[in-house]
Image (tube, rainbow, N blue to C red; front, top):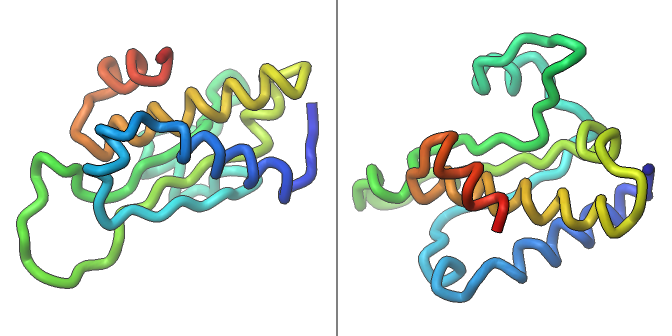
Length: 125
């Protein structure tokens, strides 16, 4: 299933807006990006190799909230959502929106300090 980048970004924004308020209030210094595919740097940071059977759907980069020190102005943490790998998993708009939401929740869980296992639980819902 493929949609325009504008539509995909709209659904990412909706997924962010639908994060429960108790978490929204705690999100600090975080920006979101949408890219078509992860580049080699993203894959390196995710400790993933470019393999056919491995899809990187999103990536959190930064210092999660539980380890953050109040040191003044710092660059924001980043979450990048990868459009093409997510689209490759979905056959309908409904499934695509659902996968975007799961991926956004998963990456936000990393922002709060969850390891991969905890982030997978957050992504389910």
